[in-house]
Length: 269
Image 1 (cartoon, rainbow, N blue to C red):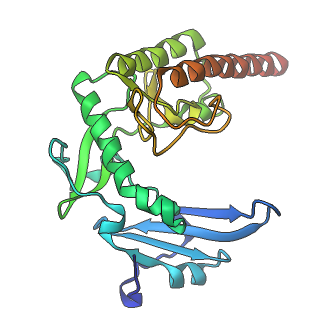
Image 2: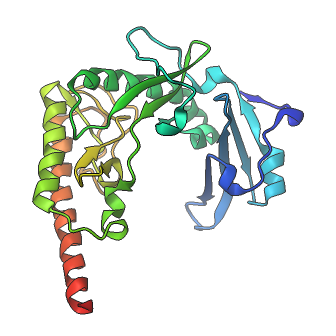
């Protein structure tokens, strides 16, 4: 899986150059047990490393190239390929979760998860629903899917109240989220991981549902499950009621945050 070629390693000047960096905590002690990190170069080649510390010299020395076939699935029939692959900066590129490479079982699932998400987005693409993320196609690398090109959004709902001073119409926001979910359900799909981190806000202050990694037809088995505290049970199959439960929790979460913001405004006004 790891191709060790020190002379070809990317020149990482700082931690900000990395694609991802995560300090992994020991479950029992709460202390940092190790650090995992990844990098994707301009040729869509992926690199991964794991060390006990976070010193830059350790990060550079332990960065290893990952074979494409380990993380990138084969391109399947019916998938759209991005037309302007030389202008990738205009898109948000969703790639395999490279930090999962420290887990053998999760590593085996990475290609399947990426291609299945692309297939779901292809189903949604013809409808162009404003409350579902706009999908532009897949990035192709020698017959494999190296990433999924999606519309960029500046604000994630989780941070909406901190990052945007504008008032939020909670009723309108929930209406948009429900409209997106209703579109999914009308096609026999459930999102299965609806939460504030998986919803963006567009320039018109409208919600846009993201992350279709767990989105599957009703009754299908799930590789990726919902986010803790946003699910009622540890489920393994796709179902409409997962989204219905999450919608109720979102409504309460939005109302609570809106109320807290209004209280803070009154105290400082």
